Length: 108
Length: 122
Image (cartoon, rainbow over all chains, first blue to last red):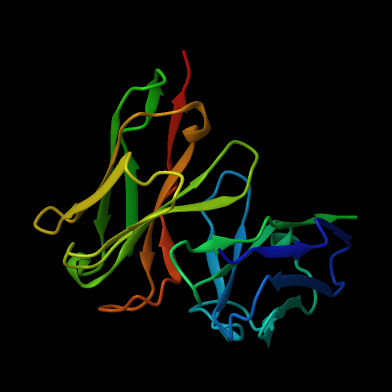
């Protein structure tokens, strides 16, 4: 099973700042990684797939990079609606599909 | 508008059974693989099971294999999860989720339901 480790667990930032979230895989997963955003009481929303492709309707301030075992989600300038929990997910080797433990981006 | 609406959750005793449903609308249901993903209270996401568009292929997490059965009725645009031999650790919000690409196992989920809560407790 591929284990995804997200860091940091919590990121405290102010609106307008840049957010950098990390996801590390226990073995190479090529570019088979996605990022989701989840706000309290809501379902997850797909942001990025195949490591760097924005999903439909996702603003350009969200970008993804990486391949192999190390991946990054960058939010270039945080908007108030971006404060949420972010999860990474891999589909390289499944079952099982696996998710990271999440990063909470909170208002500083 | 794409929509997934889960139902069937509730309180059940350990060892009991429940059947969850997920009603889909806004897309050609039979063309898309579907999954169930659960989230224990205050915890992260855990993939549970997947099924292909025609229902012939199914996959399970080890934690539920042999106890849960995923199925679908394409004539009713509905996904199901039959949950047997339930345990306390199955307590979670269960989301159904749609695969992004039709006729594909690309396994990125571009539409999720709000979830139905399953509580396993005596």
